[in-house]
Length: 249
Image 1 (cartoon, rainbow, N blue to C red):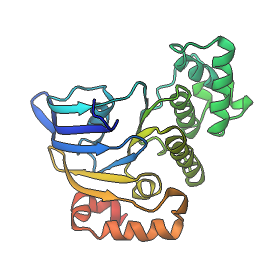
Image 2: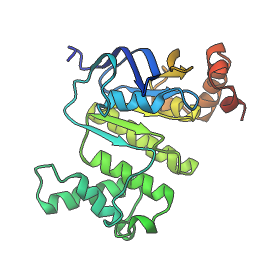
Image 3: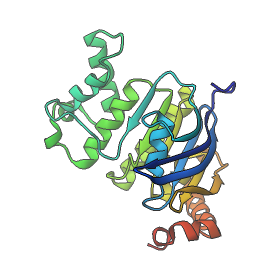
């Protein structure tokens, strides 16, 4: 553990079946900070997220992860098909020292926070849209009150308005409870709205080719600021080289 309670990666490298996927990764996320991981497909973003969250142990390097409780929202929501939306959130609380009534109450509260009412809570995954499934997965993660939240394209199936609402919910959780957040996203505007800082991975193996800081308080990041910041970031040589097709699309 590091004294400041930060999430730290030092000299991290990893590979699969003899193919190196990540190399020379060094980063630090202070407690309560929000880090976005950007980069083109195949640069190792999800692998890095899994290493930071403890799902993978790196082949080389070190991770300091001074957190008691981590929660993931994966690109695939991974809902249990035989449980309702409410039941999936309740199931995520199975290891908590809560009565059944308390688990149900927390599940109901979290589902409401992500915009799903009582009628939606009783639906099974096959009855939910892709965006609703994503919201159930986010509610399930937030319900355990994590101090480290890891998001893999968590907002990708949501429309613009709902995506911004969910980003705000995550940001408020980070501010109010000191939750450290790491998110993988292909969407530069999402990173600018939500993160304090970002790293850009590129190459094979993936290396950090740029480090970005978004200094304005999140509550003051209006559309004009986001658009200006995207233009500023997109003009950086490292960004253009890393994922030119994304920025030009």
